[in-house]
Length: 212
Image 1 (tube, rainbow, N blue to C red):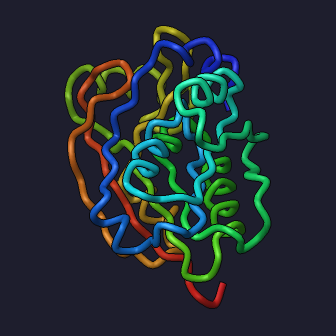
Image 2: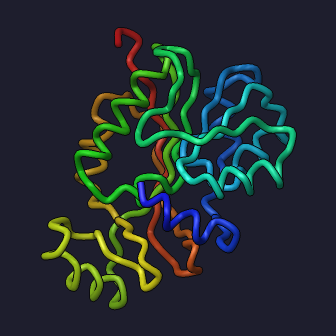
């Protein structure tokens, strides 16, 4: 989970994946249980609270991210998570939010385990809301994909100058990763990363099947 890396940069970074409140509201009620896994310093939950959502929990593996979240949002609930385990009872959550979380989990198997954990905690019909990064075609990104592909074994995984290991995603991989969910909405856009670079991005809303 690169917790040492995220602890080191916890007070310095600004995240910018936008929250699509209009679409989110169409699927989730204001009193339903929402877990923001990989919540960072809590900005998404703060926006949800400002929009009237009341049953919110933020989870992050980084102790310093959680400390920052609590300082900046003292009225919200935050908890440090352990690995890829959310610690919520099975079927107890109405919506799980993963904003720029997959990009921080470079390994295929770990991403599959994370999605399985989302399925476990979501109730039947519960919502998965993901915002993350696609592969880019600009020279800077292509050069680092080429540089690190042999080292990490997956095209799109690369190491930042400050030591963090990140991943940009092949669209086919993302479709397969979400195959167990019913797709409700999918949009592509451009986002500024935490290092203020432009990247292709996507937002996905999916529903856990009612028979799972």
